Image: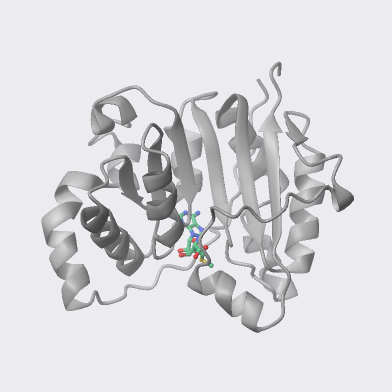
Length: 237
Ligand SMILES: C[S@@+](CC[C@H](N)C(=O)[O-])C[C@H]1O[C@@H](n2cnc3c(N)ncnc32)[C@H](O)[C@@H]1O
């Protein structure tokens, strides 16, 4: 398997944000049980051990940038036989997801606070994920900031290497030029194939099951089109 070069510039800016009273309550109640710090996994303070976290062996889907957790909670509820790892740096979003999970009594989501790229590179074993979801990653629209975009060749090679054969990389964005960049980068990755190669333009129709998040709603309000892309990890690499 090829070694993936590490994307060196973080795809996020981490601002410390205050939690609301409800979020703080959820954090204090649930984070110790359901959340972990990527830094602790990287330093070895804690093992990366989904089987222990979930108490079972099940297909594992990792979401990068779960935001406020709308999609994460809905998709976890819709797939109780799948375990989900939500990786996010934004604490109010993680706290909001903890609230959603408690409300819906969901036990198939573990939350990780920190950089998903470092986690994938250093702790997630090759060929171990059934899916990776990246919904509305920060678009970094200014030309000088584009190097911060998550979906770049090194990252896509890394993500592909962590998918099991047949595993799916699902991307969605509301920025046309980022969508084209995603297409070009994923098409050029030999370990992946576009599941919608036969459809017009190679785009996957927007799945009904994905809830419309705040980010997607804003895009719709501002008249931007939504593009979904689903790539499958090839069986032999
Ligand atoms: C535009 S928001 C979209 C959130 C959500 N997916 C949605 O559709 O509503 C992008 C999120 O990705 C997170 N993010 C970006 N790069 C990340 C990384 N490398 N690791 C973890 N989270 C990241 C940001 O903190 C931000 O909350």
